[in-house]
Length: 167
Image: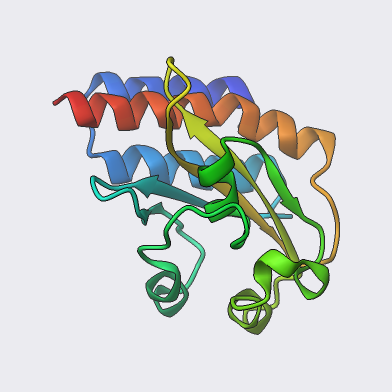
C-alpha cells in the first residue's frame, strides 16, 4: 500500500457514499499499515454537542474507547482533546511527563502506550471536525514519515465527515 493508493481508496468510498465509520476505519487502518504498525491510530469526531466520539479506532479495545468517549475539547486535557480545542497539532512524547495527561494517563499506560500525537481534522474553512491520533508503545515524537501519512489522510477524513454532515 502507498499513501496514494490509500487516498484513492478513501475517495472511492466517499464517492460511493460508504458509511462514515467504514471510510474512517479505512483511513485509520491505512495509517497503521503505512507506518509499519509502529502506531495505533484513532480518529475521533466532534458530535453535535461538541464532544469527541469514536469515529474509528480499529485496534483500541472497547473499554478504552468507552473511557474516552464524550471528551470535551480542552487545551489542557490529553492529546486529541487538546488538538480539537486548539486546532493545532499536539504531541505528547511521554504520558508520564505531560500535565495534560495527569487525570488520564493510566488509560493508555494500561494498554502499553507511552506517547501519542494528534492532528486536528479541519474542513475547508478551518473548522475542527475531529482529530487523527496516533499512539506509540515507546516514549518518542512522531517521525517525518508518520507526519506525512497523517497529513495526507486527515483531509480525506474531513471530506468524509463533511459529506456525512451534508447528507
